[in-house]
Length: 112
Length: 112
Image (spheres, each protein chain N blue to C red):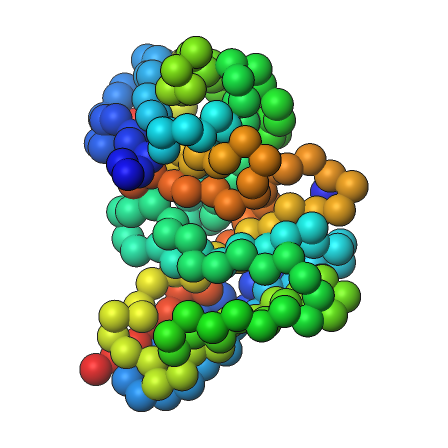
């Protein structure tokens, strides 16, 4: 069974601070996605990474995929209250089905 | 183009009853997956349908079932409801060969 570990589980910061959240697995990902979810809503896709070492940017968000494709990070620069939400990583694994496996998420609160 | 549509948004049922939830995927998407989200367990995969066939299945009891119609719309059914079935049920659609999943807003099921 492939598992994804996300850390930290909770993060509360002040507006303007930077932060990084992590996603790790003992298995190699075929692809990895990051989602953001607000309470009572479905997850919204932020980015997909597939190549080891890949870096993608989305405004103030920077996503990195590890060289070995077993880990990923999401870095937010100058966080804003609108960044508040649950950040989820999800992946499909080499040799497995296309079933998307989710981590339990990082709950981010950005205080004004 | 229209996103993933789930109905109903909210549902209250009594223990022992059964429930049917509906999902209409993004136009042109042929894969529909269902997930259960609870605070303690996060997002857990229920099953995936592609072209009316179940392609993957998670570790849920047989009380959870689903189907997909020729127009790609999907339904999931839960029989003999238990209190522990209270959760946000999310549906996601994917393109034929892509791995990016796009989620609906979910159905909040409360079992009393």
